[in-house]
Amino acid sequence: MVPPTPDPMGSDRVAIVTGGSRGVGQAVTRKLAGRGYSVVVNYAQNQGAADATVEEILAANGTALAVRGDVADELDVERLFEETTKAFGGVDVVVHTVRRAIVAPAADADLEVFDALQRTNVRGTFVVNRQASWHLRDGGSLINLSGVVGGQALTSAAAHASSNAAIEAITRVLARELRERGITVNDIAPGLGLPCTPAEVADIVAFLVGQTGHSISGHVVRVDSTHGTQFTARSRKDKP
Image (cartoon, rainbow, N blue to C red):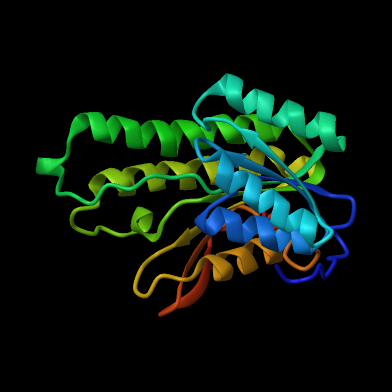
């Protein structure tokens, strides 16, 4: 892990990263920890991966804690925020990276698999975002992760696209509901063309929660290595 390079807004700040022990979530965890955040690594099953991520951060003189929880279970998510507050005194940033995908024509989709995807992607996002709206300190940041297919009519992506569209809607509404408290809410949608790397997504997260990007809210950030980064919707300072 790269030695910490503190962000002016990172000192004494606390971040929860759901799915924080693997893939994009792990990259975000490392990035924020390296910028001085105390990071809570949420995981669902693989405690070994979560513990290893925490140990890596601690070895680099960072601060981290692993907390198990199913993001679609309201009691698990309530406990996640409670344990974070008990350990570090509050929550300033929530990055929700947990999601599932189905690649199949609508005619061939298994409805049980579809229901499981919606439970994780839509219910999970709503449950985490609801707790975030209760627990985030004023001036905080909430970031969701969806996918570019939410805004594209791609074949074999009806199930996944429907959940992504729901995540985008939740993001935009919460951006309006929380703006009076100075809390920014955005969605990052990677994946069309050449997918961006987890590290690239983590860089965007760090920008959005940092001092420079904190004026941005209510956006769906569509990003991939082919088309670059595109912000859609309005900033927090725009009129409704």
